[in-house]
Image (cartoon, rainbow, N blue to C red):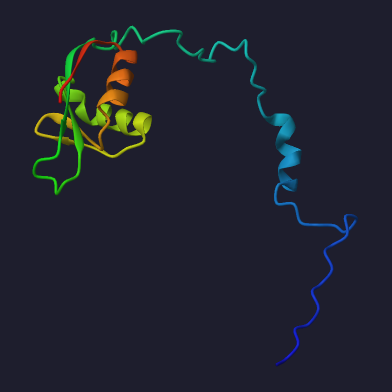
Length: 134
């Protein structure tokens, strides 16, 4: 077996190196300086954007656990969410509960037995009434 040549020593700190941004140092004086007092600065909104209105209130939600037709796997169905926002709610539930979620037949379907955790999360998000089915 052939021997490998020894590794080269790392460059010393005094050795010059190529800085791709060195040419930009000369342009630094001509750039505008951003300040926090600028009229163009946008402050984050304290509450919901009034142009879009307040988020819709969640009314009665029904959580139902089911296994039928899923090869023995348990899922949790969430009924009563706003129809136009089902994809957004599915995504938020997925991130919050750490599970899979999809939209089927106008309902959000969570993968796993998550009735208790989903009910607690939905109540914290403003649901007025959460009914926990079987």
